[in-house]
Length: 109
Image (cartoon, rainbow, N blue to C red; front, side, top):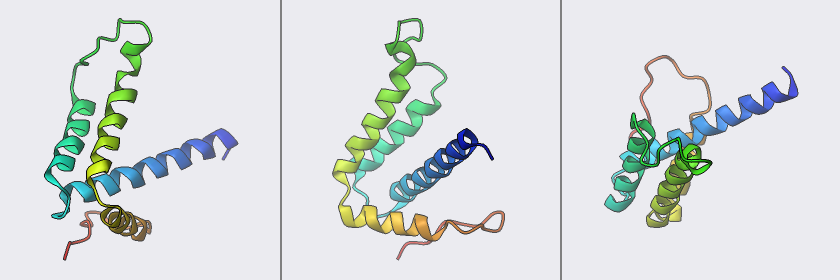
């Protein structure tokens, strides 16, 4: 694999790990409601078929997703305790081994 291909693969693996961690945080019963709303808004904004800032505006129109979504995620993280982040990160890191198709995410206590 070329150096660029390896770098893209690493980015994809890291993005998948982060997405899994935020999905676990969103489903965790100890996550504050405000954080769940902000994480849901980040996912919803990503999936919207239109942009709040039109793409025909120079520069900012194309980067609105790259600004708004991370801002919502960072704001959500301010509501979440470091212990809960560490717990969900550990659950995500445990799940790095290949799983059988249809495997369910870890259950919460």
